[in-house]
Each structure stands twice: as structure tokens, then as C-alpha cells.
Amino acid sequence: MPLRLSWISYSIRLFVITAVMAAAMLVLLAFELIQRQVLLEQNAVRVDSLTAPAFILDNEFQRFQHALELHLYTQQRVSKDNLQMRLDLLTSKVDWVRESLGSAFIFKDPQNMATLDMMQTYVQRAQQVLAQEPSQLHELSMLLNDMQAFTSKNHPMSYSADLFASLMLEQQNTELLSQNQQITWLTLAQLVLLMTAAFGLLKRHRSQQREQTALTALNDQLRQAQSDTGAASRGKSLFLANMSHELRTPFNGIVGILNILGTTPLSSQQADLVKTVNDSAGHFLKLLNDILDMSALESGKISLQSEAVDLRALMMNAEAIMRPLAIQKGLSFQVPDLPAEPVWVKSDATRLRQILLNLLNNAFKFTEQGQVSLHFRQSTDEKSLRFFEFSICDTGIGLDETSLGKLFQRFYQVDSGLSRKFSGVGLGLEISLSLARLLGGDIHVQSQPGQGSNFTVRLPLVSHQPHTVEAAPPSPPLSTTDNEKLRILVAEDHPVNQKFLAFLLQRLGHQATFCENGEIALQTLDKEDFDVVLMDIHMPVMDGLTATRTIRSRSCRKARIPIIALTADVFKEARESAAAAGVNAFIPKPVQLQELQNALNTHVKISSQEDEAVLN
Image (cartoon, rainbow, N blue to C red; front, side):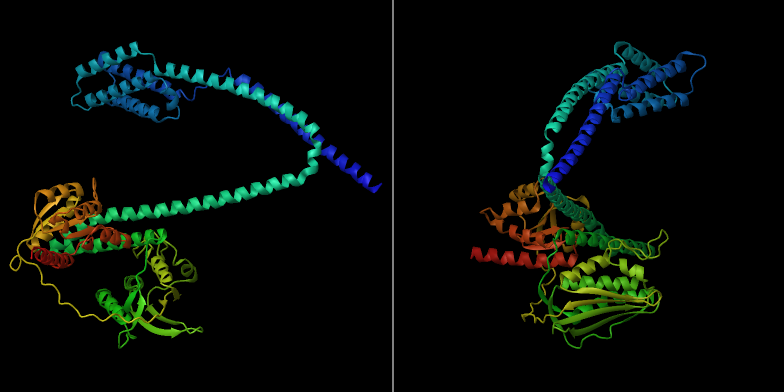
């Protein structure tokens, strides 16, 4: 009995649920019938919003014609300013029609596009005539005659567009009505099926399984969306890296030419102006390097070098770099914990130096009086792991708790108002923290407003003695008195960089031939003899690496010519690709005179010795 009562109760619940669903389907059917009626009524309604731009354009065209007629043939002439106003309105309506949402409908008729182009032609003619002083009435009269002839021979664009849109909308409404009828029959069929499929509610757990499957699919979609977002972020980082390269290329010429200008005889005022521009260029270069580093960190393109680093020498170098800034600002700069002997560790010297200089620059930037100090110490944790620490202490403005929590966020600046006192974009600290963590360490900050800050870099101390090698004497500088003038082929597409390199090579006493891409470089090398090639990497038509590989693949003597790469791409991958292509030396931009001179000394000398050995 209890089981029977339970079944009856369940049947009642099932009947109620089915009745409610049937009622809902009846309501849906009623909505479908109402929708059908609305569509029937809408079918008779003309939709003019898509063709409104064409109507307005035709109207403005006729208004301008009328204004032109009044200006030319009546006693109460329309002023030139009013005529120009009507022409400006017509011009704006021509552009509006091209860009309007209804343009796709208007221009399905090719005649409408031709009509619009002709109107554009008349507008341009009118602009040219009205721009003349005094206005040429004869040319205005000819323009009016042409416009009147054009209007009489062509149907108005608005009529054509309206007819085309109306036909299309009627066709769409017909299709919608047909679909609506199908939906109505389908709804009736669903109602019948629902009444005969009540037993399906007994299998509710299957619907739950379907919901679980849908949820799993949704989670997969979310994961895919997250992956796509990561790919977009990496693409953005690569874009920033490419943009930084494109900016560094012309910047190479700017910095180089400024350096050359600074070595020429200048008045005191000119020297001060050159120094000001150089300071601005240095700030710009730091910003470019920060953007390049940030994009490299995000895209995973920064790789660390494992080498022997002398921490004592690193601190001395940082002190020498920052000392002039301390003197300029009238600050005391102390390095009280400088080790008495070299401290060799296994790390990346370039990145360590970058972190240290970033933090020191930050300390000097926010310190107006008092001192900045650089401290060093070694420590061991509870697991007997050894560490070394650099601490940069200052007596600057300090930070509150809110600022400390946001300090290492990208683009965050303590002084971020429109009238902010301290310049910068807020990338240095985030880059420093990212690099410290790549090196296995971290950065900690202690600070109070008005009492200064203490930044501490803590990194693993892995002892690593350098290989002892006999130091080779420096190569003597090249000059026209000690060496014959070198014939140098320069492949560089940027005109400013060409001018800069021409100055450098002329100053070294060499003869340079310039070409704009790798293909021209190959052709020039076939026709003439050169002692060395300076090869830019990124060039149109044929890049520098392709040209280098082509040269190295040849069987003639010129295949061994020294090739020195010049590029604004400073990533490790760029150096490795250049070496694999057969480049002898790699010089990053901005090109420095001494670095270029050393490369020429080294590789042209080696090449000459190899050629003599082959001949002997």
C-alpha cells in the first residue's frame, strides 16, 4: 500500500509538472502567433533608416546647386561664405554616405557608387574654384552646368537605394514569415510530443549528466579562453619588442651624431645645448631599454648567463657610475661595506649590474638631501644555504603602507599627479624584481614617509672562481698612418645611420660604400673588392643574415671576408642567429667608436693572416 500511494503521489506530481509545461508551451504558441501578426504588419512598413544618408546627400547636392544658381544668376547673390558652407555640408555628407551603416545596401547598385564618385569629383572641383581669389565665375558656371546635366541624366541615388533596400527588406520579411510558420508548426509538434513523453521525467538523472557534460565543456572553453588571453599577451610583448627595435634603429643615428657633434669645436652655449640633448637621449634610451626588457620578460625571451662575477668589482663600478650624480645633487654617497678582496660568485653580471643600478637610480631620484649608501653582506639561512645581499639605503621621501603594497606594480608611481615632481614610467622596479627572482632571489623594502627607504636584494651565493687566462695586449688603434685605408662595404637601410657610420669610418680614415639592403650588398660585393662588411640585420628585400649566409656559401675567396653585424636587436637569440649565419662580430646599436675600431682591428687582421696562410 505505501508503495502504491508513493507511485500515485509521484504520478500526480508528474501530471502537475507536465500540465505546467504544456501550459508554458501554449503560452509560447500564443507568443509565436502574436509575433507572426507583428511580422505581417511590419511587412507593409517601409524601413528608411538605411537609405536616409542617400536621401540627405541628394538633398544637400540639390541645395548646393540651388545656392550656386543664386550666387551666379540672381541679384541677391548668395555670399561666398554661405556658398562655402553649403559645399562643406555637401562634402561631409559624401563622406557620411561612404562610412554610414547603410553603405553596404546603397552600394550594392554599382551605379550608386559611380554617382557618389561623380559627386566627389564635383565637390573637389568646387573646392578648387572657391579657393581661388577672386572666385572664377566662369568656372563656377561650367561646374553648375555639369552638375545640372549630371542630375538630369541620372536617377537620384536615394531612389535607387530606397528601392533596393525595400526589395531586400520585403524578401527578408517573407523569409521570416516562412520561418515563423515553420516554428509555429514545430511548436505544435513539440506540444504533442511533450504530452506523450511525460515518462522522460523519470530519467532526470540523465539530464543531470548532460548538465555535467555541458559544465565540463564550459570549463574547457574557459581554459581555452585563458590560453588565448595568454597568447594575446605574448603577442603584445613581441609587438613591443619589435617596436622597441624599430625605435632603437633611428635612435642609433641620433645618439651617434650627437656624440660626433660633441667632439667638434662648439661655443659654450652650443656645448650646453648638446649636453641637454644628450641627457634627454639618455633618458629616452633608458625608457626604450625598460620597454624592451619588460617585453622580453613577458615573452620568456630573457635567458641568464652563468659566469663568474666579482661582486667587489661590481660595487666599485656602480659607485663610479653613480658618483657624478651624487655630486650633481649635493648628496653623500657611501659604500662602507666594500670587500677588501674580490668576491667571486656564479651569476649573471649584466643582470646583477642592471638591478643594482636601477635601485641606486631610484634612491638618488627620490632623495633631495642627506645621503645614499650601498651596503653588502653575506649570510647563511637555517638550511645552511649561503646568500649575499645588497642594501641601498637613502634619506629620501619614503613610502607609506599603501605605496609599499603597490610599489612593484607595472607603471605605478609614488608621485603620479599631473604636477608630479619626479619623472619616469614605473617599469624599473618591476623589471628589477623580475630579474632578481629569475636569479633565484628577491627584493624587500622597508620605508617610512619622510624617513627614507631601504631596498635589499637577496640572492644565492654560489662560489665560482674565474678561469685564469693570460691577458692579451690591446689591439693598436687603426689609423691612416699605421695601416692602409680599409675598403668597407656597409649594408644599412636607414639614412640617418648611414650618415652616422660615414662620419665614424671617415674619422677612422677608411673608405665606405653604402647599400640599402642585402641584395644590393651581394651585387656590390660581386663587382668590387672590399676588406670588411658592416652588415645590418633588419633590412628590406633581403635581411643581413640571409645575405651573410649567401656570402659564406660561395666557393671564392670573398666567402671568407670579415662580416661585422650591426643591429638594434640585442636579444641573445639575435647574437646566436648571427653567429650561426657566419658573422665574425656582433655590435649592438647605438654603435660606439671604440667598439667598432676594436672589431675592425681584430677581425680584419685575422682575415689578412688567414689569406696569407692560404697563399703560402
